[in-house]
Length: 359
Image (cartoon, rainbow, N blue to C red; front, side, top):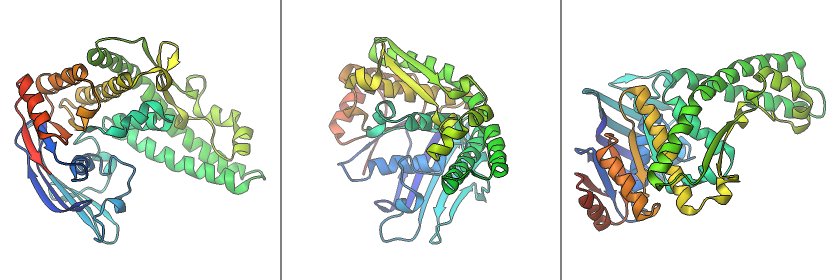
C-alpha cells in the first residue's frame, strides 16, 4: 500500500506555507475556484514525478515574488516510511531528497511514488494531437521502467540534435559523418522504446476497453490501435529511407516520436464521433487502465488524483467511478470539488468513509 500522510508546501504557487495531515484512504479536497485545490494535487504529483503535471516549468511553480520553493511529503510504502522533498533553490537548482539522502539520478527514483492524475483539460488527450497520447503512454511506462525513461530522455536529446543539424545546414547537405553518428544512437534508443511500447500497449488497450465498458455500461464499438512506423521497419532504416524528406522538411518526419493511439467509435475517430459523455468515459477508462498496469507492476496501487470529477461525468457514470474508488481499487484517492454538500451526499450515499480538507 502507498499512502501519503503529510504534505508541506513552502512558496509553491498560491501557498506561502501550508501543511496537511491525511488520515484516510479517500480524501476530499473542497474549496472555491482559485483557492488551490488543483495546486495541492499537483504538489503531490510533483513529489512522484519531480515535475508538475501541467506544462509549467519549475520556475513557474514558485510563488510570485519569491526565489525558491519546497515541497515535502511523508509517505508509507508497504509499512516503510519515506520522507521526500523537492526543493528549487534561488539559483534555480532542483534538489530531490529521500529520507535525508540527496538523489543524484532522478531516473532511478521515478516510479517509487507512482501517481495517476486526471484534470478538467485531459479530454484533450482524446481530441487533440498525438503528442498528448504519447505523453500518456510515456507517463505510464516511465513509472514502471527506469530503463524506458532513460531511453526516452536520450532519444529526445538526440532528436533535438538531429533536427538542429538538419535546420542549420539547409539548403546544403549536413555533415554525413555526424548525422550517421546521431542516427545510430537515435535508432538504438528508438528501437528500445518501440519494443517496450509494442509489448505494453496491447495490455493497455485491453484494459481501456474493459474500464470503458465498466463506466459506460456499453462498448459503443470502441476500437483502439497502436500505430507506429516501426511496425514496418527498424528505426535506422526509417531514418535512411526518409533522409531526403527529412532534409527538405528540416526535421525528422518519422520515428517513435510520431507514434499514436488511434481511437475510433466504429469507423469514425473518437474526437469527431464520440459524445461528451463518451469522451469523458474514455478518458477515465484510460486513466484507470494506466493505474491498473502500474499497480500490477509495482505490487502496490498508485495514488489517484481526480480533479473536478463531479463536473465531468453524468450521475450513472459517476456512481460507477465512486463505487470503484470506495470499494474496489484499494488506492489512496484525492478528489477535488467546489461543493462540500455534494461531496458529502455522494460519499454518504454509497457508504464510503472519507476525510474532508478545505482550501
